[in-house]
Amino acid sequence: MSEPTQTELEAAAFRRLLQHLDERRDVQNIDMMNLTGFCRNCLSRWYQEEAAARSVEIDKEAAREVVYGMPYAEWKAKYQTEASAEQAAAFEASKPDH
Image (cartoon, rainbow, N blue to C red; front, side):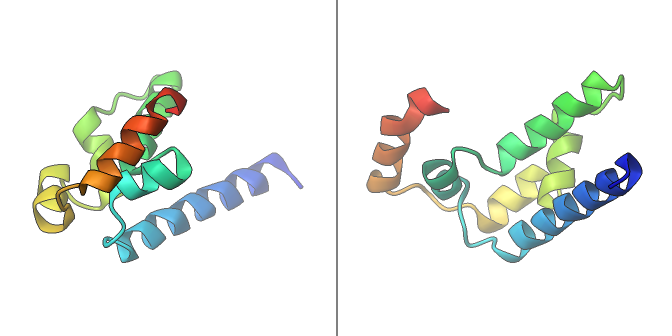
């Protein structure tokens, strides 16, 4: 497979991941962290870090908007729920891994 084709496929998979996350707004970031070790915020941070590695300036909020599909504050107000005691405990127990 050529490098441009691989890059196209990776970009398409990333866009599909973002679409999937957009369709699963019921899945909270803390659930993702507890199950996978990353969440939407991690993904936006990685996006920002990769941009910086390529000398592309993008701030934290702009990177989050790429991942969330809207300003983070808006997403948080519409979709984020308070973490349960069980979710918070699971997160605290796994923190050294993150």
